[in-house]
Amino acid sequence: MMLSAAKPGKKGLTSLFIDGEFAVKVDTAVFEASDIKIGSGITDEELRALIQKSDECRAYEKGLYLLGYRAHSQKELAEKLSRVFPREAACKAVSRLAELGLADDEAYAYSRASYLFNRKGFSPYRVKFDLRQKGIDESTAEKVVGQTCPDTVEKIKEIIKKKYPAFASDEKVKRRAANALRRLGYGWEDIIGAFDALESGDDFY
Image 1 (cartoon, rainbow, N blue to C red):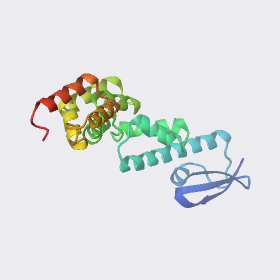
Image 2 (image 1 turned 120 degrees about the horizontal axis):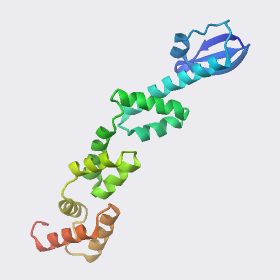
Image 3 (image 1 turned 180 degrees about the vertical axis):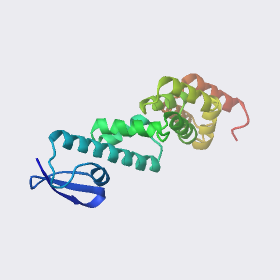
Image 4 (image 1 turned 90 degrees about the vertical axis):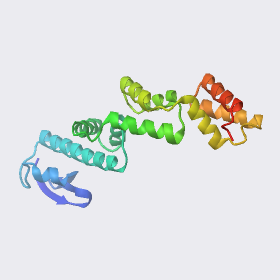
């Protein structure tokens, strides 16, 4: 096979033509850094290696873009990149980003846990479940939740005061609040404890 033409195009891609016919688009910088020249022969192995290198480079650049938009866990990042690039290229890009400290699962876990506790009102159980779903390992999730979770009963009281102002005087509102708290992952013992504290104290009003 002979590389008959290489035409730079949009989005940093170069179209390669082999034996006079279009073959593939690869990253322009990767192609220019290779030893492959127009008019020279190219083997299947060389072409595959060039495509793989191009995929890895572009997956890395896409990963940088995604991390610039918001934090991602390594699992989440690999899954997103795999929708566009081969799985192997996506995983190599994530590994490189992790080595550089740009895809840090522990830092992501702290940020995510803080958001879920403070903005969503999730229970420790629900936060840990979310982190595990995002690919955070068990020990890291356990540590992060233990260090960031607020007092559970106090958090429930805060949620009730904010979202259910008629709690003290309306049994329907109380049931609705209890069901909502269960969906947030809180156990009945903590819910009842918070209810009792609110009903027996004078801090609700």
